[in-house]
Length: 606
Ligand code: F6R
Image (cartoon, rainbow, N blue to C red; front, top):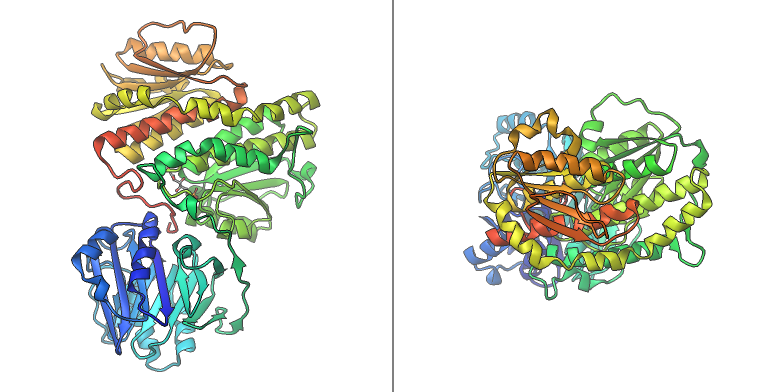
């Protein structure tokens, strides 16, 4: 995580660095800092807290310099304070870093032995001193090449030098880094979003590469220090999707954007006239695939779990799922007839990328369902299925989740059809049903008043539970995750049928329990489980779909009814009230909804 920015220009850079840092805050927000070069000196200013605090603490308007670097931090080594904030500097070199240096302890010992003095608890400071040390005996490019070879772990770096005052060095291994091109200035940034207001011309560094950025020139190198050429991409300018508009929070905006997310996904992948799914050009023969493994983290993992239910329902494939951080270190049996699907909003999540890398090294078939199409995961798989939901800025994932499950559902349908595991009539009906989904989501969004009132009970409780069976179980997990990450309330998701095997012991008088019981094939079973928790004092919020049939249960505390559709698609609608529940709980508590404590949007460290 952490966000880095660097600008080399023919004019003062501090204002642009600060404005880019504000955009990068979604990557980390426990401290912030900036360093510029002016009249042969490096001026470094850092604060604990947000970029706003940095602005309040220092007179940044008068910070001069045409070259500078900036950083927003998500702490890994050392507590969030101004000393551990980046940039870190020696007398000659200043560095901003995103990633983790795994051999920092050994390097620190070596550097202390050489007389270097350390000020912070960070791993980053070893990079500063290592470059400083290497520059004693080497020219710049050689010093950078050998420094990078000495570092173990992951990094995206921005580096400025007191004695070489006209350039910035950028380097990447494992953490994302982009170069941007402007008029009489060039940029370095953790992502294109940070550079968006300055340029739409971008080059992404690949692992092992570094670059030298001057105001009128950018040169790229491979890990051996040899010059390389890189492509310049022109990104579409969709500035509006980066603004909150009339919404109080990005999360509120992103929840409301979901009908559009689904509309765009359908437009991209569904041929309405022929009720057909437009996914062609698979780089493998789909009949050679006998099993699927879906891999992701957090919300994206919940998308994988959701997809498992659909793939199993619609196809004969053997489907398993994995949390990326577990998969990457297990002894996996790689099978040629297995398709590995990586699910990620950012496409930069370190664990998910490492899992992909492992599969690539074993020559496996790989596919990605991602939002950021320029991301590392999107670039390194055999086949990409973008979700096209536009930038998701709120740290808690909402529209990307619906976007991911839509594409996974569409993929499951397509594979079922290609493998002749679904009859054509059924297939066409299911594809047709998709067309109504945006308007059903739109209607299901109109529940703000009900949810606002209910959310207080969740805030006041010691803890809460989210229960579901079958297709509703992954949604229960996602609902619980949303509540805990936004309103810091203990919330657990369980398969409703598991309660009696232990968790039922937690139920006490007045405990809020969300029961997801749409009128699908699991309905009756879930209602029985609901009665068991009501009998033990739980305050049940039942979420179901509209139906002519009455709900045959007493003592339900509150009920929310979403719209009606076929069983496969109900998970989309059930998700909406849970997102709103988490949003309003956090709003009532006055928490920072778009930047919950201890979290960051793009998790580029292990
Ligand atoms: C939760 C959330 C996270 C992410 C996870 C993976 O609301 O957003 O759990 O889903 O960190 O991130 P991506 O999808 O970028 O790989």
